[in-house]
Image (cartoon, rainbow, N blue to C red; front, side, top):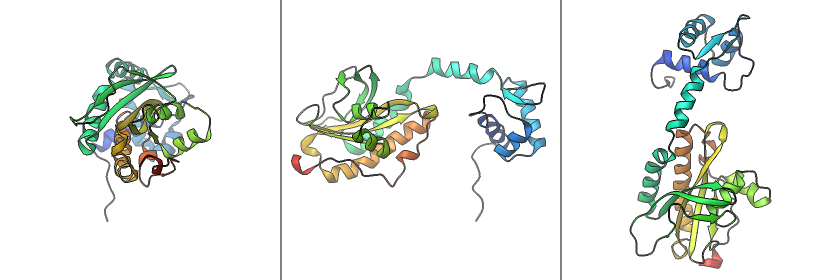
Length: 250
């Protein structure tokens, strides 16, 4: 069986692997360290570093160490200026609504509240009525519990959410609502938002939970990948550790 090749241009991939080697470097890296971290030959690294240095991605110090140059910082500033979460959320929410026929939403934390930043739904006779811009207390609802858990809130329930990467709420914010929510991460696993699937309580049971959980997890995985986070917590098999009793609501 042939070895799986990385997509794109090999030389570009090698150059990018050199840049990514600096992710945890503060003092810079020597040629030997770069070779050990990338698996590239010294001669290859020197040629690629010459190009990277020409465009300001790297600097070479007098003692031979390499350090990041100013260009990555400049590009990062451009990214921050152009970043709109809607560009990443829209296709994910659209697919989640299409596959579930329920209401999907993005929530961010603002102080002790969560704010509905974006939402999508399909026309149904009974559906969730969360509005964009609406502020909701953090301690109620699956999306709020996710934001609390991945902001470092202490407690056994939050430990379970951090371990399983999802939360479920039944009749918490309103007597007729239910939701599944997952976190979305960016670079260095910084919490960006939570993505939530909400529905009327009468349409939610264990079968619906087991059907829709993988869809919400996939949505969170997709956004996390696009935003530069580590998606491994969303990959099956899922950790079914939510201590929710469905029977009392059936």
